[in-house]
Amino acid sequence: MSQAGGSPEPRSPAGDPCRLGARVVIAGTRSGSGKTTVSTGIMAALRSRGLAVASAKAGPDYIDPGYHALATGRPGTNLDAWMSGLHAVAPLAARCASGSDILVVEGVMGLFDGVGATTLASSADLAAALDAPVVLVVDAAGMGASVAALVRGYRDMRPELRFGGVILNMVGSDRHEEVLRAALASCGASVLGALRRGDVEHWRERHLGLVPVAEDPSGAADRIAKLAALVSMRIDLEAVLALARSAPPLMTVLPQPARRVGSARVAVAAGRAFSFHYPENLRRIEEAGGELCFFDPLADADLPAGSTALYAAGGFPEIYAAELTDNVDLCARVKEKVLRGLVTWAECGGLLWLCRDLGGAPLCGALPASGRMTGRLTLGYREARLRKSSPIAASGSVLRGHEFHYSAIEPSGDGLLMQPPSAGGLADAAAPGVAGFCSPTMIASYLHVHLGADPLPAERFVAAASAPTGGAGRTGSVLEEERSRRRPR
Image (cartoon, rainbow, N blue to C red; front, top):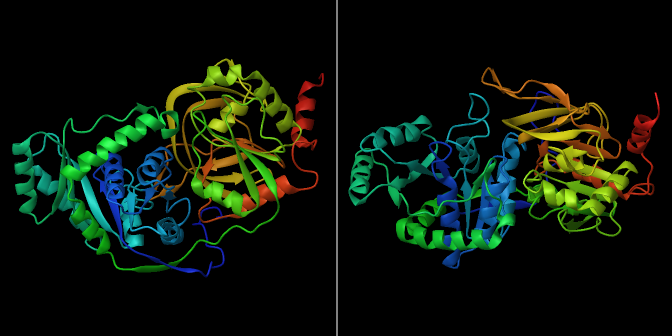
């Protein structure tokens, strides 16, 4: 657990050495340059050649890793130097890459974009921590010889990085590609491939990015198969492989597993409406002794039998509000169990689902708040100091995480003090404030946390759900508070 104002500190060394082999970071000049298209296409194309491909995503994104997992056939990981600490990047990458022939890492935003005016948590810092070659994806639409100046600037900004070459995107024609290649040859930059404008079928998008794979798995699989064939034609995969294999072996240790602290059945909200789960968080819960029992809030009438905890992570409840409302039986049962002390951890979309309503559509009503869509994006890293004890952290503890939503709840709650980070002399746009709900049996807030470097929250969560008086039968402080609100004044 990190302390306020500091970086997360590593726990005691895991001790198991691991060697990180072939690896490459696919970065971009900016958001929207084509990183996801190129990264996912390379992953799928290499897999189609019979290689075992591991994947990772820089930063806190949930949606892109779903496409990576579909392309590679195995779960990936998030590598976030701000949430997990720079010390955790190589160990997490090594565990993810175990048993693979190559690790392909998709960057975030532009190559040097990090927290505030710094490169902290940027693709560049990640590539340096992994000592990995960088391939730069350039949206070349409307560019000619100027592409050389652009690429030269990115290459020379940090000469210590292993700059491996360029993949051009949005190329207009054969002639356009010739001009771009000639310009880049003049500055010594290798071109590893070029995708044409109109080559790639547009990904389905929504207000938080791409539509999650869970909502259209067959359609996503079809698009990825077409993308793999296209990348095999347009990108020099042998050159990409050679570049990845040129990375020197990196020795590290595997992340420390969570301690087994009990035995609990954890109901995990999943399906189309709730698909934002970090694989690391689910792994940590299992390590601590939790049995993951997935259920679909759109269809199931009750939580899985014997559940002693509920984990409701993020997703798009606003898209499926009507169907969630129609599942009256589940909403009523979840409300009753949460108010009776079911150990509960809800993040963002899960927070909205537990509210009384979302935009007037009735939901669970386990929280004394109403949700609404605002049309305004709340986005950024957060340090959250708990003002009350919860199942994942004690009062006074600080969690590092991020927010990413277009909704708001009223009242906002008073369980956490949310503080944006300050870096390079600049503070995040959001102001500090209290928000979220905490009790000994529940935490529900907009904060997404990543447990790659810190298994303690998962240990506390499973321990709380394993306690002899724990689970849905306990009359906890939440129920007492609900009764207090109903008493006449």
